[in-house]
Image 1 (tube, helix red, strand yellow):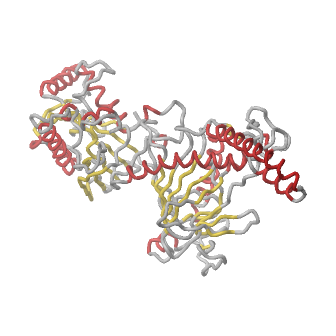
Image 2: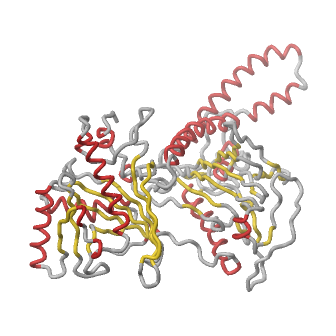
Image 3: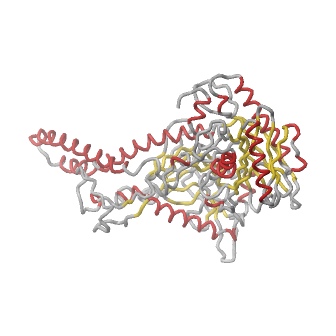
Length: 584
């Protein structure tokens, strides 16, 4: 069936230059990023949850998945500590202020009394802080809005910057300088006469509770309460991070803690940053706590004084809103700013989201045979392919391969749905990108399923029987790997099939040489490991294919790589642990 590619749950996007949301109107962000979220298998995501994985990791960047997942987990630990620290600060301020005032007038006699009272106050502050921390953390967990971005800002002296932003006016401050020293204007105007200004990222506040940020060079500026811009410190080779208070914490504290406006300016040097946003569960409702409105308990009280269910309270500056609502409203506004500039922009169209397909190849490793479908109609009429299915809705590519390939095969073989059968395990073998095939780019995930000769012949006979009663039902033919009819197949197949079958052959050879259960599952061959970690890297064919206007193959490139960039659902189950002889 046709699918809405915009709805794909597992797609975590690379954001190209000039496609970052515009947090201020008429500003073009000269930054590119890879955006990710909490990497969860689809089967572990609660119904209705948003802002969580599985993440579609770029296979072409080996090591990225392992590094960012480990960093993300450490950020979870740090975020809990930061929530607790903020709660502690919120519950000590009033007492500290009272003590400072009292110290001016107290007598020597009162000092001994105050010492005892001070200890009681500290205990009360500590208890209140712990209670407030528990309140904060009640809405912080596996489904919270905690995205992470790896960002790159090209230097203004680079050819890349000039090619993408040369027509824009540089209205930004100069990163790392107090003054504003714009160069001669570079303007891009539309019919309304308004110009678009080039910036790193325009002024904004973050939408969650707080942000952890690390940068490799100056660029980030923070606005203080007096309205002055301050250059953020750089801890290039240190494990130190800038913490930025964000919108939801300002709402909770009724403005006592302010969300920090910040921006990134243009600079001659390249700048990298790693940003982890720390938000709440999508349905977590946030409203000013009564302790900060003057209508409830003091800061030393153990009661958090939540206003979530009481509606509008006197003294509250903000109405209740959920994290999900606030995120949606803020992102929609920033996206609209970007859309409204496209008539005055170096790009008139944003990069489309690719459509995704999953193809399942049925292989017999023992006899080196493959079963292919001969299409009787449709786009591939008269051509052989595997079982191709478009990835729909919130499916992962693996789920699409199960729906359109593995499950029908199991049904043909008489294997009941839901029955465990380790002999029919999906393994992703290739990830290919196509341009010129559809109206938007296409990414096709290639899977293999290993069966024996008897099962393959059974499936072939079922196809033949169905064709006798259904005129347009495809045929199935079996070929040896060295006799595949590439002349009767899509033009790209001859370039990647051999590489995929080499991986399958290598997996089979390793399976035959092991005794730890690897043979039962037919997963990818593994790279020798220096530490005990399952499936750190596996082989995958990556490639790109470009078709011309006459649908001929104009350009192609393929490569077999070792990578950890597999989606969690593909190699995220316990069978792969067992296949490598390791405990889950």
